[in-house]
Length: 162
Image 1 (cartoon, rainbow, N blue to C red):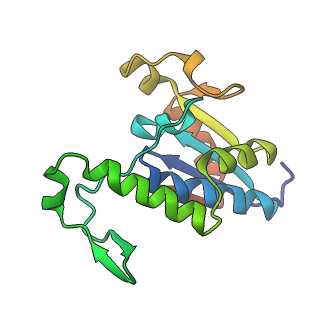
Image 2 (cartoon, one colour; image 1 turned 90 degrees about the vertical axis):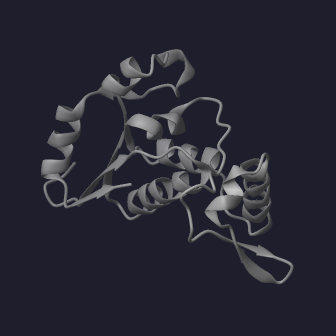
């Protein structure tokens, strides 16, 4: 990284389909703009680094969630989350909407991030805590702890917690 190159670091803590988009869109956009990007995946965000993604949406605790249906936008009240199959239905609807609108998949965005040399760091403590195996995660990741994130964050022009 040159002395005048901008840098951007983020902590990625969420692992649902809807929460996967912001960090990967921001990372790939910043990298395309010539920004040096570092992503630190911890706790449930670590699931976004699995080789085989099966991301879903959780309607629980997401009162702002509105889905386009029948020409209008339908809110998903928290109570609906208690019904069996609602998260699966919301996930299917979201994946269909993503495809219909031509939005890149998370797999495609991850590929773009790798091609753009985005630094992706898997939190070793979280890996140990959840008893995850490195073989289940993407290849060529860096494994480190909070100190590594802090080194990147203290040098960065922009830091985000997602």
